[in-house]
Image 1 (cartoon, rainbow, N blue to C red):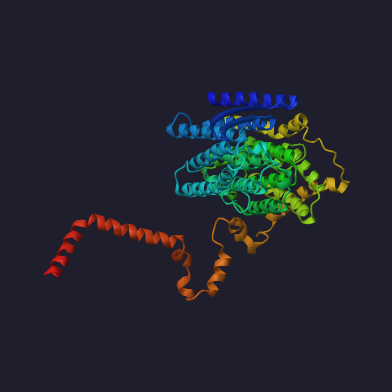
Image 2 (image 1 turned 90 degrees about the vertical axis):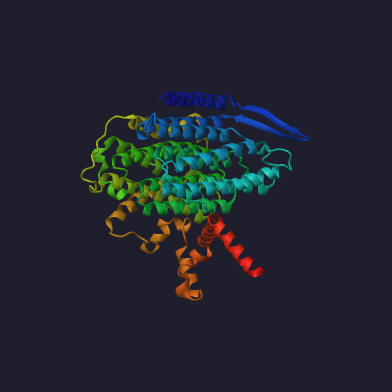
Length: 550
């Protein structure tokens, strides 16, 4: 329990200093010289300004709520719960190291720490599905490290790893490597498949890792290293919008509760990235902070539902959870409305400003239409969760006893619900994020609300029909555009032109990595038999050579 109080105190401490640094326009720069070789120096740098301090305070707040929640969800004073607690603290330390570092070498320390600790947290339950999910998560994040490592080697020729202080000096290719690395960490297309797979982790981990820290690390890195010449890039906007579109469609076809929320996180990450590449740096950071609060609340409420529904995550078996868990369902729907951008909740302020400034940007009609279409789809899958948790008929197991009593899990979601309602307007008033003069005609001001209401209507209409729209593309949307599995249609096209069709039904198993594993197993068994039977082989070879010599 004392760790929660320490983290809450650190939250208020860093929040206060963030406001102080903003008012006085201060920054704190700490430098530690590691080595000096000719004209090249290795330094460890900590850089504190209002952006880093504000992000650290939000990380401390959400981690304190997640640890308080896990004292009931995971238990206390057991070997397993202590291991979980130490891993979460290691994760927080790695995140803070990455936040306060303007130096690429010291950023890599926190960046790798995030990847390794997140792997340990995803495989926490020690099942086969957890191992596979952890491997996907770890290897995808490793791909992102390649870009940072190449950038670090490249910066050796410039004489400094301080990328933050020479943003207008370095080559464009270095920035593109950093962008690709951030795309892997923030799960943009084509690296999106690891985020829903990481839902194999415990729910407090999903709340902390997949809402506010790990997935937003890439967005935060691009916010810090923002360079207007390199970042106003139409191709990156297209990738971000495709991520929004893919994740929103997949969330409407998914039945796993935590995966639906993970795909909604992916959609919001696409919104942050696209707003960043449109030049709205402060608004992207603003939406990052507000999204972290209400998305962690959404994860924690879903964890309570899973906890009381006998570890069931299928939303088709949720039924009228509102009858049994009224307070949890209320908080769950508050966070869903904040995610939709419902007026005067925290998500509304950031999303509405992003959409209005996007309307004033010089972009083509396709990008403009995609923005609004994805906005409507967000409301669609949020209403889907609302329907399954409140209106859907009872599908529970008859022996499943569900009742709501006051616990640390409820205590943590009370604070997060309060912040989900008030955090957006507080941030806007304190930090002047709305310091823009926006002139738009009346129909453009109302079009975001119209698309949200249209998404709500389409979401309700989807349940009035027996089958989904786009039934032919069902596999396309349930498998995340085949990013995490075999491309079935491509395979079937190859089969038509392959020789001896009947023998090559499973050609991927014989000529791919699985076939290689067969040969490795065969070779391993051969060597093992040789080692166990070496005396027999020696005597047999002796007899053969003896006969030959005779």
